[in-house]
Length: 199
Image (tube, rainbow, N blue to C red):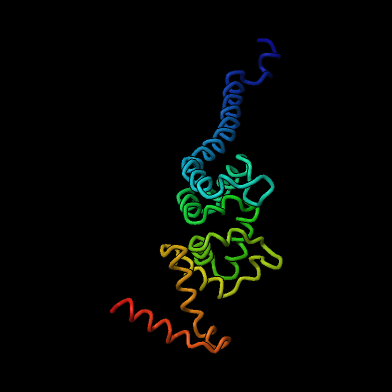
């Protein structure tokens, strides 16, 4: 037999190897796209919540964002916190969709270093406004302390109350300070007003 045929590689084996390499390359391309599509399954719901509150904002304002930006923000939020959680956070605080997505993971990492991973994640979910924090700086995640954790519980507990009742609650909590500053017996006035309503 020809020595050239004896020394040549097995063509069938080479073809199989090439097919495997091509298949692996295709999988690497398809899997991220599939993951992206999965993350955007709830994106229309998030976009609807955002547009309901910020759909009429003027160009140049903070919440005026391109479709591409909003999609990227939701994708990153879904990657870091999970798709359902991301959609719920946008439901609760629609403006988070306009926050800088590059901060989501680094800030969570900083929070995790302070409070522990599970506690940090739960804190941000309770108070999605924390997604606005950069990793460092004057308002950075690295400045967080116990007050940020406590505040997240207050925000989560008072969110169902709504703006009007939350403002009333803040007013009631401010009564002692009002009395000190003005000298007006605000507590007694409020108590008398409540009695009048109930009687």
